[in-house]
Image: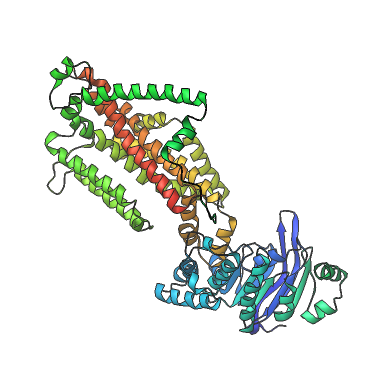
Length: 249
Length: 358
C-alpha cells in the first residue's frame, strides 16, 4: 500500500466515457508528492483526458480520484479545493485577453483565496520575475509572444501556490525557438521539488526531469517506468513503435 | 516603410482629378450629380435659413411668408415637445431631470466608470434622481402623476427604464438559457422565443389594456409601469440572445482556465465570461439600444404623450397646423441627435476595446 501521507494524486479503477466511446479504461495511478511524471502516447490515446480528469475539467464515470487527500466527487467545494491545489497550464495558454498580465495573475488569488491586492501583486511580480518577464506585467496577453504568454500562464498558476502542477502539452502550440524558454521554466520548477504531471512529446525534457514516464494508448496505461527503462529498454511493442516514430526521423 | 525616396504627396486637386474626373463618363456624372446636389442645398438653405421666420409668436408672419420655414412654431411651442402635459410652473423639474440623465449618459462613457460596481450605481442613482424630480411628492416638490408626464422627458424615462430593467433581465435569461438543468434551459428558451415572435405593439397592448383584467387589483399599478415592464421583457428577449451569441463566441479554453484556477461560477461569469461576451457583442448591443430608443414612440397607442405625439399636438391646433412639416423636421433632428451620438459612441467603444482584434 502506498503511503497516503506522501501521495499527491491517487487514481483507482477510473473509467471515462464520451457517450458510448470508452475514453479511459481502468486507470490506476499513484503519484507521490514531489514526483515528476511525464505522460506520452499517440494522439487520441486519452493522455489529455486523463490529466483533465484530475481537476474535473472532464468528469469520470467510474472509480475514484483523490487529490492531496481530497476526494474528487460532485461536491463543488471539493472540486474548487482541488482546482486551487492543482495548477494547470494549457496548450493554448488560455490567458484572459481582456486583463493585463498582472491582473491575470492576481485575479484568482484575490477572489478565491481572499488575498488583498498589494500582497497578490507582490506575489505575482515575484513569479513573473521567476519566469523572467516582470517587465511585461502591465501589458495585455495579445501583445506578448507565444513563449511569453505560456510563461505568464505558468506564473498565473503558481500564484495560487499549488501543490501540484498539471501541464497539458504546454509546448505543442509554440514556435520551435520558443519551446526552450518554456521548458527552462519547467525544469526550474522540477528542480525546486514541485509535483508535476506533464503531457508532452518533449522527450529530452522527459529524460532530464521525469521520475517516471507513462505510456498510454487506447485509453489505457500500456507501460511505465523510469526514463532509462522506458527509453532504452521498452518492453511493449506499441511503446517501441511509438518511440521509433518520434525519435526515428 | 523603408523607401528612401517617397513619392510627392498628392495635392487635393490631384486626388479630386483621380477620383472624380478620371474618365469622360465620370466627369459628366460628377458634374450632373454635383449640380443637382447644389440645387437641392441652395433651395434647402433658402427655405430653412434665409427666408425662415424664427421669432416667438409670429404665426401671422409665418402665414404671410410662403418661401421659408416657420421655426416660430418651435420657439413658441417647444415646451410641449419637451415636457408634454407636465404643469407649466413645474417644467424646470422635468428639464433638470432630463439634464441629469444626459449627464449620467455622458459620465458612463468615461472609462473610470466601467466597473461592475460604479456603472450600475451611477445609473440607479441618476434614475432615482430623475424619478424623484419628475414624480415629486417628497422633498417639498408637488406631486405630478405619471399621466401628466410627457414629451422628451417621458421618452427619456421610458428608454432608460427599459434599459435599466431589461439589461439585468437579459443577463439572467442568457445565463439561465445556458443552464445545465435541461428544464430550466428549455423553459427560458421557450420564453425568449415566444416574446421574440410577438410584435412589440401587441406586447405593449397586452400589458397596458389586457393585463389589468388578469391581475388582482393591488398588482395592477400604473399603466406606464406595466408598459415599461412589457417593453423590458421584449428588450431582454432580444438582448439575451445577443449576449448568448457573445458568450458562445468565446473559446472554451477561457472558461476552462478560470475553472482550473479554482474560480467559482459567479466569479467566472462576472470577471471572465460576461466582460468578454459584452465586448464581442458590442455592435449588436448598440444596435439594440438604437432600436429601443426609436420604438419608444409606440407608447403613443396606449395614450402616452411621448415626444412624437407631443410634437404632433404642438402643431395640431388650428393656429399652427400649417407648420406640421417644420415640427416633423425638428422631431427628426431630435431623434437624429440622440441616435447618431449613440452610434458614434458605439463606434468609439469598438475602436477602444479592439473588437475583432484579439
